[in-house]
Image 1 (tube, helix red, strand yellow):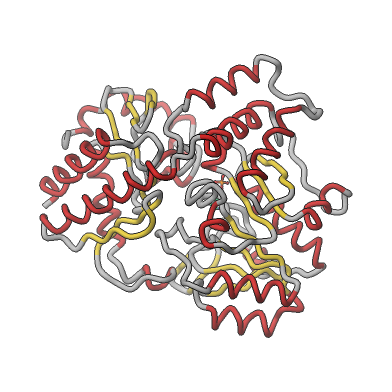
Image 2 (image 1 turned 120 degrees about the vertical axis):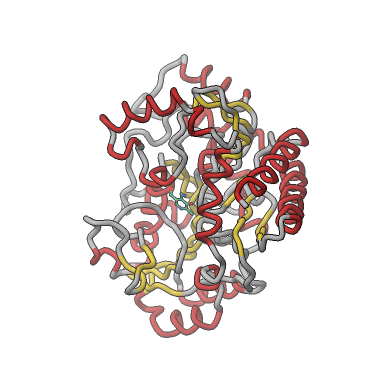
Length: 423
Ligand code: PMP
């Protein structure tokens, strides 16, 4: 397996064709740094490439395949629904059923508007908060990802945080106030001082993208209390945490309710669909036309069928205990392997989404995360892929409902072999 690159004859041929017609050979820049392997099909927790090599999948399509790949109830619902037409330019019953099911699962939200990508639903949330408050500035946090558009994409460069891409209009970031996360003191100071200008506070309530970091006890409560006091809209970006860290996402897990929250990924079993959910007094601003939110493909038949089937599955057949047990055993197993190979492997986070890196540090935010040797893990990741573990260089591993004892055994055996060969 360590000579996997030589095995990838068909993948390499497809890669050459892809490079001729697609910049970088990929359709999302996130995948430029990923494995250049072409997948033939996926089932359960496994990916199978075009050369017949299999991988235990801990990337889950960057998160969506929470129920495993192509869950039968979701693909059946989509096939059945799209037999009646793909998009109507009019309302249909599955939109109603999907909205009701999402609100039932979340528990705290009155209403929902569907979109296509997490990026878009974040934009809808920001516009709604600004429309509701008449204020412009938004507080956000270092290392939190909210999509790829000009006003939210940020990178940590040599001169500090700023634009992450050529062509990005730097001025679009000016309306944001960037703070370190998980620090009640800086948040309190900023909101005490600038609250008259601040429309919203947006955060990943459990910081997953950069590395999996939980909120400190009391931090979300402080944010909630300050936002309530100053009439600021609290937005949880739950595109990754939603439906994953629990049926009602981080809001339910940590018991702190936002005014608005965005969802995507795990909500629809792999179908591209996102949601903005919230309290009705805010959401009704879309309904009365004061705030615009549009999209040709919003509420498409397949998206609504996939959302309704996935969220119904999560309500009726919750996979959280199975996922927690696999994730915990895997985290323990990886730690044991780190010790037996005498490596400072660090495995931290939640069983359903955890972070693997090297080094040791007290991690509570983006800056403290940088004390770890993230580069060393980024160099290990391609070796793990070559040994049949589908993971990304960022170090975040996701666990699905289809990861069981067979996958655990394969994952630990393959991780062990990788460390042996890498030494
Ligand atoms: N917000 C968060 C927290 C995310 O993790 C992501 C995607 N990784 C997005 C927004 C953007 O979602 P999408 O890629 O679907 O546009």
